[in-house]
Length: 311
Image 1: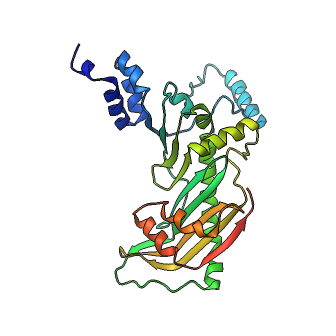
Image 2: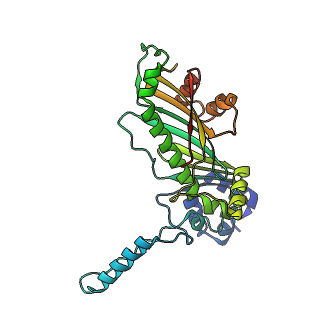
Image 3: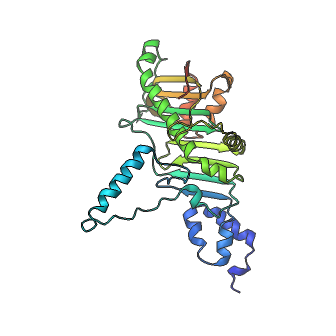
């Protein structure tokens, strides 16, 4: 028996929990029988995804199936000149995590963000889900510069609000669609791992994050079991929402950064939350960073309330 074998299993599992990366833990499973059993006991995991595979429950559309069979037929007419390449199999998150049965906290990281913005612009969002969207906080701006002499802009006039409304609504809808798509992609994972307490889905660009707690995941499973799940073209349907929107043509932060066309949007289901909760929800979304500083400054601005129908 070597020195490593003398280390108690709980200590090894605690070390593996610090590793977190699923790909590394899967490699660890091939080291020995002991590692194979202990690596799957990890309760805190990070799953980095480059692509999302389709689950067995996802069927091709009639048109897709037709063209696939057509191309197979054409390829069969020319076996000498063409040899079909075997497509690489893309595993689903559930398949990748097969064997990990004690997951408590899971972070899923996608390869990139969802927005295509003009140069200098940025959008950051955080959405909470249960069976559907519960809330979403969005911060966006057209450009950011470091200017210690800049003066915080005056309050936005009604005409300025209307002129920039289209861009802000596009930012908001884009964020909600990105969030609902990520929520939909995690549906099988949520159903399979009933032991999970927290699930966070973000992108490597740091653009947005979907979060679900234990109560939200339980709510989703119960809704799915009843057959009440609402999806639309590979994303969860966004319910009727109320948007509290605050804007500033020019916003100077205490750090000296000046944001142009800065916007804060707090989104909730219509008729569910009270108006007084905006500050608490928004300030806790991004922590102590430039975006958190922007949230604190924008919360002092005039609030405009808009309603949006389900989509």
